[in-house]
Length: 129
Image (cartoon, rainbow, N blue to C red):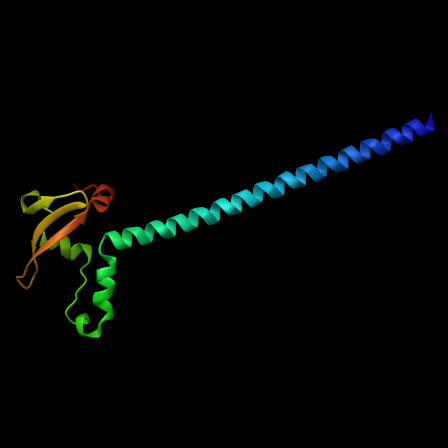
């Protein structure tokens, strides 16, 4: 009878050890999947940023700013300057609308007339149309 009790205790010990091992294995798999998903999402985000950069004229801007001779002719404007030039993106100043956004006529402080494109993505996040 003592040998039967001893055998049962050994079997229960093995079952509890395998349960811990299985639980640890599942935990390692879950952590691995989480880490893999995080890496994949980060790569997708970088790819999407590069795609938007190319689509919205980023390559042209990069080329213009890379040549030293063109640097003095290239000027980057902030959003406040563009809002002022277009009279806060007034509907009366719309030149056209397209799949990528709306183009407004604007006037710079020095009197030059410019076309300002407001991307559709920007307009949806700022509440402008």
